Image: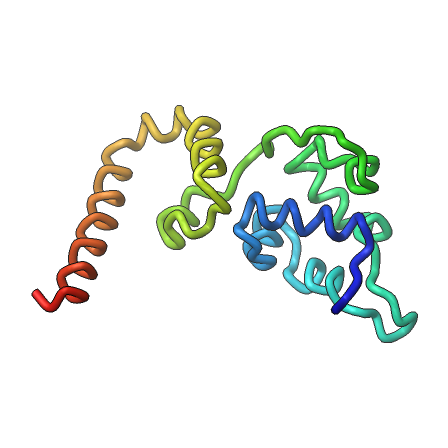
Length: 147
């Protein structure tokens, strides 16, 4: 099993929390190319080690732009509590990925609270979206029960 540096384990915690473990979604969320994240979870063939996120200044900067409380000391293992991200995954990801893009119910609630003004201004779109989800689920149940 691959042994990650402590700071990269912490990076994985962020990926799990904000993007349900999906590295591509997290890369999109912070605004970098996916390979920049992927390489932090593989052995570098040049030095036979997993690169540290702390040595990747561009990645660290992008993370801190979205999640300012993800400080160097937090990555090193301090007990500092993470604050909410400045912006959670884009609304379009909720439309296309559904709630699967969130790690848990708390992440969904956090997203809704942080985007309350937008949601209120666009409530009709969300009613339509959630009605479509309900209809899809109902159809799946009917198909599964043979009705």
